[in-house]
Length: 137
Ligand SMILES: Cc1cc2nc3c(=O)[nH]c(=O)nc-3n(C[C@H](O)[C@H](O)[C@H](O)COP(=O)(O)OP(=O)(O)OC[C@H]3O[C@@H](n4cnc5c(N)ncnc54)[C@H](O)[C@@H]3O)c2cc1C
Image 1: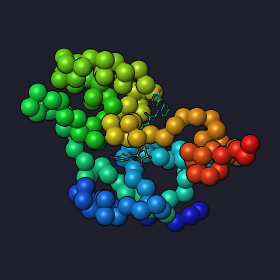
Image 2 (image 1 turned 30 degrees about the vertical axis):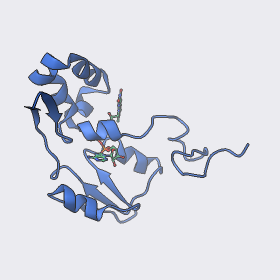
Image 3 (image 1 turned 180 degrees about the vertical axis):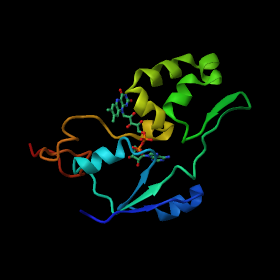
């Protein structure tokens, strides 16, 4: 078992200060934990963003502002989204399962890594997983 640290910053500025290549952001972890289980990424430290990011959905100067930590299920059922951009609700509710939608965050959904089978198989070369690791032609 490898030691793993998790930091819980309360502000975005603090989260950004802690970030480096061995320190990874984590929101709800539904994508990030798969990387560890499959040996795609082995961060030494996680920065848990959940306390630093907004869970609000609001209207501001004719725009809809969606907090990075709004859960997929909340986004898909929100009245502003259903009224003004129903396609967004339809798209988010078409993905994954209700259990995952209940915890997965909007930012995590947008920032999730590729679902490509090469990326998820550490025995195959993949430039997205490890730059410079692509197949030699
Ligand atoms: C069984 C299963 C089925 C799935 N099916 C689908 C599907 O049909 N369609 C689909 O689109 N997705 C699908 N997914 C992926 C799912 O949508 C993502 O796992 C989820 O959206 C990630 O959200 P999270 O909050 O858990 O992010 P995390 O796992 O915590 O993070 C995901 C990535 O985003 C980065 N990140 C997170 N928050 C931030 C932030 N605020 N700023 C910068 N970087 C950030 C993390 O560092 C990480 O690289 C599925 C996942 C599972 C496990």
